[in-house]
Length: 421
Ligand code: GLU
Image 1 (cartoon, rainbow, N blue to C red):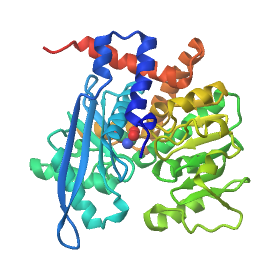
Image 2 (tube, rainbow, N blue to C red):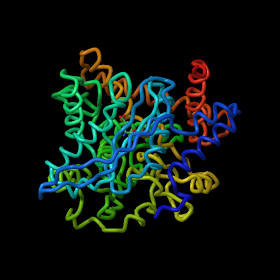
Image 3 (cartoon, rainbow, N blue to C red):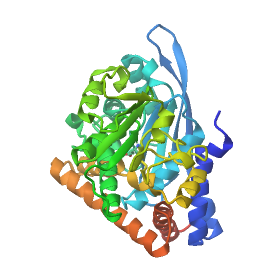
């Protein structure tokens, strides 16, 4: 059971309150932004391969619609619950505002372990869930995308389901689609690419050489494995990675391309069975405490807590996951001088290229990959520079500066629009 202390929604509200206090937001506006605007819970049956049906529960939460249609992924994981989805939706609001793309925040989730389902069951679950939440969706309303446990194929099923209901193809209702039905070049790699760019920028600001920078990555899914791959390419030494099967450590540097090839070929893209005599197997917990320069948590929430914050040896943390560091750990790490590039900035590459995918779909004009990567870099590095400048001028942590910028933008939009009626 999750302790109340580690409840993601409680943490998200705590982070918001901190920003609202510093900004001096009026109580009435604070009350609006502290809670999600809309929440939908759906319970629905899915026909299983063995005959019979099984009930599933899912959610779609729209946190704030002030700056535009809402945006955010759909997660399939056994530990999904309403408070996690609320937190993730609120973090999407701040993320979109921070990188200044015209969206509010949303998130969805289904309580399910996708590894336990057949492809047919997954398709039926996805199409039924899409139908259940379709009352909220639309290119001008709410645009989902992949998150943990979901991928481009599932986005294709959602796009097809919504299109079948409407009787015409609606590509812009979802992002993270396969390229052959209107997906964007560079979208799959976008979150990991953004993480790589943030490592590069923070190293530059700290006067550290990229070449030989020792990096540890927790999580070897889409975000972690792409970040590790791109960091390896620009000259970093990736000394440790982990996934749900444990940690893999090699002080002289892991062969990341070989590990990626391995996970591409093996079931559920796991590292279990990866064999390299130079590689030491360690626990996932020990991985976080390895001696390194940069630690990239790219798995799930609440990985760096007051329990292990004292033992983190990295001098920089770049948050590939959403909510990997608790506020207690944040405080301990700040006191110890560990710099954190916060999630709402560090992992924003995904939603930035989702925005490009949506724009390309709406205008039915597609860009090449060079253009996409270049625009992504301009936006995310621009946001990093703004955060860095505010943090330096006002002596704040990067997280606090990022929150001040983001919350202020959302507050301004809500204030400009006024209260209806
Ligand atoms: N799930 C991703 C995130 O947490 C991407 C969301 C999107 O592209 O809409 O940022």
